[in-house]
Amino acid sequence: MYFHFAFLLLPVDLINKGPIDAHFTFMPPTAHVANCFELAPRKDIVAPGERQTIQISFKATLLGMFDEEFQFSVAGSPMPAALRIKGCIDGPNLHLDVKDFGDIAFGECSLGLDAA
Image (cartoon, rainbow, N blue to C red; front, side, top):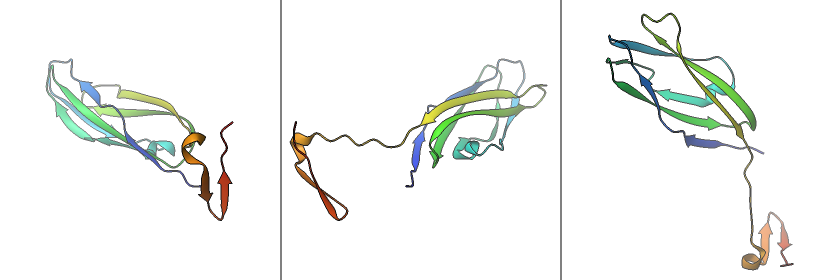
């Protein structure tokens, strides 16, 4: 089976609490699941007291748990700003109410659903 999940996560804000412009650059991680994430913008400048919204989209073909850390290099800062995203990707679920369907064709066979 092949699963493809795509969704847009909530936006994340980078906030400049310092007294000067903060030039930031996204540092792409090398982990396999990290390649499923897309962050935009990848670089910009945040003025003092301002914020920059980062949009995160996610497209996965793997099932299971993930725990990824994304880093942004900030000019003049000895440590990068870090964002950690954890989650779990489950396979799709199909729920049928047998009262509404009756017989359902599936491939070359027919499934008879009886209300119990």
